[in-house]
Length: 393
Image (cartoon, rainbow, N blue to C red; front, top):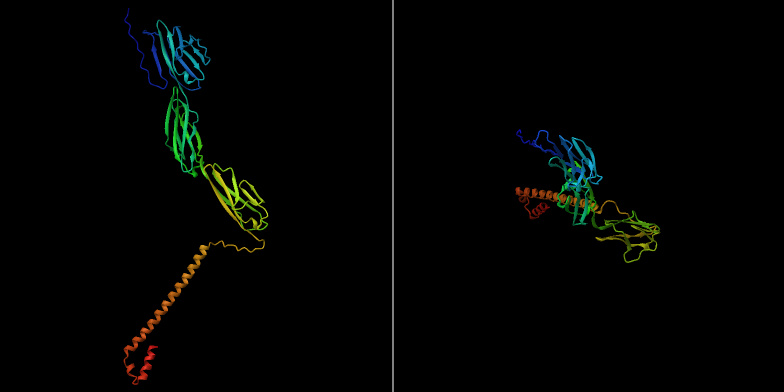
């Protein structure tokens, strides 16, 4: 007998879909089987192929990961209608599995029975893309406090990547992951301080996954910040006289919005003709007996607030002094400036006058000292005295 040289298959190249060649004998005409690994999305359809080489009609068996026989030489052996024999030929045996689930994952055996039993395994991998994540409020938002929000992706394979975004900027979160045997649940939790102005602010939670092919599953969320109410009474314009009608509107804000708005009159009961409809308070045919201070109050779970309006009803013929639209502070400032300017002008005028007169007197006195004969020109005392008086003048 001639010496037999053992034949070895060439090394398999690395690729996304690995192809492995197994030789089942050591002769140039030996039979071989090839199996291809498959990755499919959950709910999709997987094709499991067994390629034959030098097939001579031997028995071909395909088994599932639990080693249950699916097909025996092209004949169904397991009653699972999701498996269908698509092709059985001397070169290729192909079956199809529809509505794939993660429980179908594992190695599918392509077995070829010759003198000895040989097999090759085709590995089926199932990818589970995440659904749109949900947002859970772990701690409610109250003005001046913090809100705790969790973005949750309950099921994916491999685990999804979650991120929070606000105004185009990513918010760092605390990520936790749980292994649920075949799939993973992931959550990302953030804590952010909130004020009244943050009520209604938009955030989004995004889930990224290889099976989404660059797309994202996004859950949009708006902050719901609770805060105490504010109250403001919108007064009527102009003055009110007897016979007129009064209409007040109580403008209320708050979260939650107060359901009940209370109108009252300080130290008195409301007039009989008063009509209340939610935030609106009306009195028809006013009289001076309606004068007083009216109060609007509102309350929610986070506080209460109130505002008041003082009603003054005039006689029909009364002359009411209208106030200038120019603020009193401006008028007072202008008057003060005018008075200050006048005083400064008077001071400057008086100072200049006094200085000019002083200069004149000093000049006259200097002239007399320089001419001593003036005193000697008057031999008699009376004349000298007269001259001296003129000097003093």
